[in-house]
Length: 129
Image 1 (cartoon, rainbow, N blue to C red):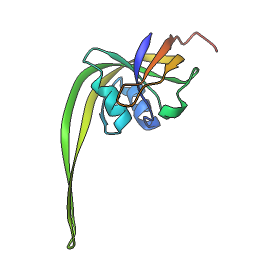
Image 2: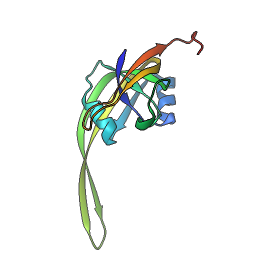
Image 3: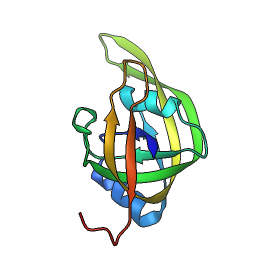
Protein backbone atom coordinates (compact mmCIF):
# COMPACT_ATOMS: atom_id res chain seq x y z
CA UNK A 1 0.00 0.00 0.00
CA UNK A 2 1.18 3.57 -0.65
CA UNK A 3 1.83 5.88 2.29
CA UNK A 4 3.05 9.45 2.69
CA UNK A 5 6.23 9.37 4.81
CA UNK A 6 7.27 11.33 7.87
CA UNK A 7 10.97 10.54 8.33
CA UNK A 8 13.55 11.29 11.01
CA UNK A 9 10.96 11.00 13.79
CA UNK A 10 12.63 10.43 17.17
CA UNK A 11 12.58 6.97 18.72
CA UNK A 12 10.94 8.42 21.85
CA UNK A 13 7.98 9.72 19.83
CA UNK A 14 7.58 6.40 18.01
CA UNK A 15 7.73 4.45 21.29
CA UNK A 16 5.19 6.80 22.87
CA UNK A 17 2.82 6.32 19.91
CA UNK A 18 3.31 2.56 20.15
CA UNK A 19 2.60 2.53 23.90
CA UNK A 20 -0.23 5.06 24.11
CA UNK A 21 -1.81 4.34 20.69
CA UNK A 22 -2.70 8.05 20.22
CA UNK A 23 -0.19 10.93 20.12
CA UNK A 24 -0.11 14.49 18.84
CA UNK A 25 3.11 15.56 17.12
CA UNK A 26 4.32 18.89 15.77
CA UNK A 27 6.04 18.97 12.39
CA UNK A 28 8.45 21.80 11.64
CA UNK A 29 11.10 20.27 9.38
CA UNK A 30 10.55 21.36 5.76
CA UNK A 31 10.46 17.88 4.16
CA UNK A 32 8.01 16.52 6.75
CA UNK A 33 5.92 19.71 6.62
CA UNK A 34 5.47 19.29 2.86
CA UNK A 35 4.44 15.68 3.40
CA UNK A 36 1.97 16.73 6.13
CA UNK A 37 0.40 19.29 3.78
CA UNK A 38 -0.40 16.50 1.31
CA UNK A 39 -2.37 14.52 3.89
CA UNK A 40 -5.96 14.73 5.12
CA UNK A 41 -7.78 13.64 8.25
CA UNK A 42 -8.44 9.91 7.91
CA UNK A 43 -5.32 9.19 5.83
CA UNK A 44 -2.87 6.53 7.00
CA UNK A 45 0.80 7.58 6.95
CA UNK A 46 4.19 5.89 7.49
CA UNK A 47 6.50 7.17 10.26
CA UNK A 48 10.13 6.13 10.63
CA UNK A 49 13.18 7.24 12.59
CA UNK A 50 15.31 6.72 9.48
CA UNK A 51 16.44 9.93 7.76
CA UNK A 52 14.78 10.78 4.45
CA UNK A 53 17.92 10.03 2.42
CA UNK A 54 18.18 6.53 3.93
CA UNK A 55 14.57 5.35 3.42
CA UNK A 56 14.83 2.34 1.11
CA UNK A 57 13.42 -1.17 0.72
CA UNK A 58 13.50 -2.93 4.08
CA UNK A 59 13.13 0.23 6.19
CA UNK A 60 10.67 -0.39 9.01
CA UNK A 61 8.32 2.01 10.72
CA UNK A 62 4.86 2.62 12.12
CA UNK A 63 1.67 3.22 10.19
CA UNK A 64 -0.80 5.58 11.82
CA UNK A 65 -4.13 7.18 10.98
CA UNK A 66 -4.47 10.97 11.15
CA UNK A 67 -7.31 11.83 13.55
CA UNK A 68 -6.80 15.62 13.54
CA UNK A 69 -4.70 18.06 11.55
CA UNK A 70 -3.88 21.73 12.16
CA UNK A 71 -1.63 24.03 10.15
CA UNK A 72 -0.53 27.17 11.97
CA UNK A 73 2.00 29.99 11.98
CA UNK A 74 4.39 30.30 14.89
CA UNK A 75 6.13 33.62 15.52
CA UNK A 76 9.53 33.64 17.20
CA UNK A 77 11.19 36.77 18.52
CA UNK A 78 14.81 37.01 19.57
CA UNK A 79 15.98 40.22 21.17
CA UNK A 80 19.17 41.52 22.74
CA UNK A 81 20.43 45.01 23.46
CA UNK A 82 22.00 45.18 20.00
CA UNK A 83 19.35 43.69 17.72
CA UNK A 84 15.76 42.57 17.37
CA UNK A 85 14.93 39.62 15.13
CA UNK A 86 11.50 38.24 14.30
CA UNK A 87 10.79 35.08 12.32
CA UNK A 88 7.65 33.22 11.38
CA UNK A 89 7.57 29.45 10.97
CA UNK A 90 4.72 27.33 9.69
CA UNK A 91 4.09 24.08 11.48
CA UNK A 92 1.69 21.18 11.30
CA UNK A 93 0.15 19.50 14.31
CA UNK A 94 -1.08 15.95 13.70
CA UNK A 95 -2.96 13.72 16.11
CA UNK A 96 -2.04 10.16 15.16
CA UNK A 97 -3.58 6.82 16.04
CA UNK A 98 -1.32 3.79 15.74
CA UNK A 99 -2.46 1.16 13.24
CA UNK A 100 0.52 -1.19 13.12
CA UNK A 101 4.02 -1.74 11.76
CA UNK A 102 5.15 -1.77 8.14
CA UNK A 103 8.21 -2.46 6.00
CA UNK A 104 9.06 -0.46 2.87
CA UNK A 105 8.84 -2.43 -0.35
CA UNK A 106 9.70 0.48 -2.65
CA UNK A 107 10.58 4.11 -1.96
CA UNK A 108 9.41 6.73 -4.41
CA UNK A 109 11.74 9.69 -4.44
CA UNK A 110 10.05 13.02 -4.50
CA UNK A 111 10.80 16.24 -6.32
CA UNK A 112 11.49 19.38 -4.34
CA UNK A 113 8.23 20.67 -2.92
CA UNK A 114 6.41 17.32 -3.01
CA UNK A 115 5.57 14.73 -0.37
CA UNK A 116 7.71 11.62 0.01
CA UNK A 117 5.75 8.42 -0.71
CA UNK A 118 6.60 4.75 -0.12
CA UNK A 119 4.98 1.47 -1.07
CA UNK A 120 5.01 -0.58 2.15
CA UNK A 121 3.57 -3.82 3.44
CA UNK A 122 1.95 -4.08 6.86
CA UNK A 123 3.92 -6.47 9.06
CA UNK A 124 2.04 -9.06 11.07
CA UNK A 125 3.65 -10.23 14.28
CA UNK A 126 3.68 -13.83 13.13
CA UNK A 127 5.80 -12.97 10.05
CA UNK A 128 9.48 -13.65 10.58
CA UNK A 129 11.85 -12.02 8.10
